[in-house]
Image (cartoon, rainbow, N blue to C red):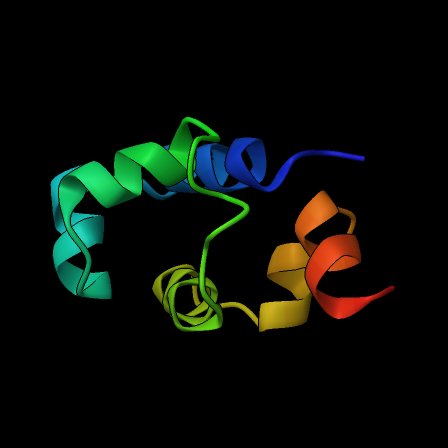
Amino acid sequence: MITIDKKLKSLLNESGITQKEAAREMGIGVTTLQGILSGKHTKRMSLRVALAFAELFEMDIYDLIEGTEYEVENWGY
């Protein structure tokens, strides 16, 4: 199982979008984004932020969280 922070970090790197651009598009602060990508804030990541990540990466929310601890802890799968 991959951690959600590692999956998000990988997707962000692949996209070529900077952290500053991503935070602005998602409507969150850069420090919040950095906290999520470092694993410090993933347990408190809201559904709104998870949906913003899915929109940023143009993917379904389930595809975004599938196989991560976020899926198990927050969706009960």
